[in-house]
Image (tube, rainbow, N blue to C red; front, side, top):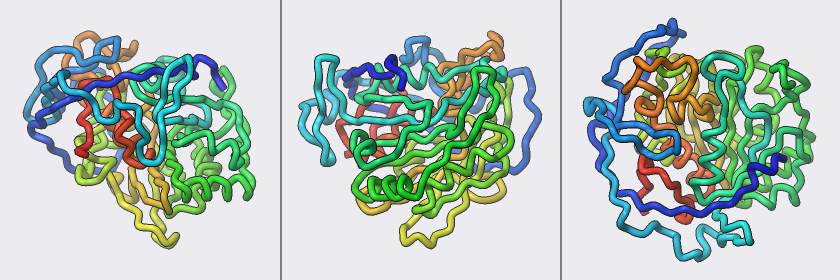
Length: 363
């Protein structure tokens, strides 16, 4: 557990937005070449985040993407500190939190520019300092007991294996049947589970993920998924389009970056009602969720939504000539995480994010 991720912050911002020209279609299969020049600027939005994570001014292409207008004059829902969706805000001398998140597994290291050319610092900083969430990070395997799980509202599954400082893939984590049963009972009782994949090249990473997901309708495949329009100005990411904006996960999303993830098959025989939020190009799902008892499970194909390059458009691989066509303009990554965490936390209205690119769900 990393102490620097134990900060607590509470920040509220009401955002009224206008959505202009939301569009997206399923991409064709296949992995395309990664050009080192700017792609189609028509996929841009209204402007991107600056280094502080706030919205930078600047024109975008209103033909596709989001054009947002912000009104910070209203108060945010849930700012009275009252209980919400069965939970009360927890306050200490360090501050208050609404959602308690455990990130389990190593963060990704193979983002833009390859190994160590990217980081997940923007994602981690946003969770710690710009949302009403508290995050504990476990990069060595914890034991999933009822007592451990009871500390959290949301569990985020990342790279479930030992990873050396040199980037070598170590042993896969092993979870006992008792740990799987404890996780299933925790979800049934109201816990929220988010799973990511796409961290390594051999596909073996899906083994511990699938063990933990065995009580759901979802299973990751040892394949490789990509979107379309791969672009050097996006750090090498490809656009995953085709989001169903009528679902709690796909709301207000036209595209996010993807780079060689794992598709998700849906069995449909676990007695639940799985929903595909975004199909993968060709086969299976790239994003899907289902309610299990009082809890919620969301599975996603890739880990590029955690990389700093995708949040801020900053990377050694992104040329200054790419102005206006960088990831923070092209993709709705903050919106993706707002939707995912809010869904996983039982639509808690006390969960808010200080970021004017976010379109809050209607209450």
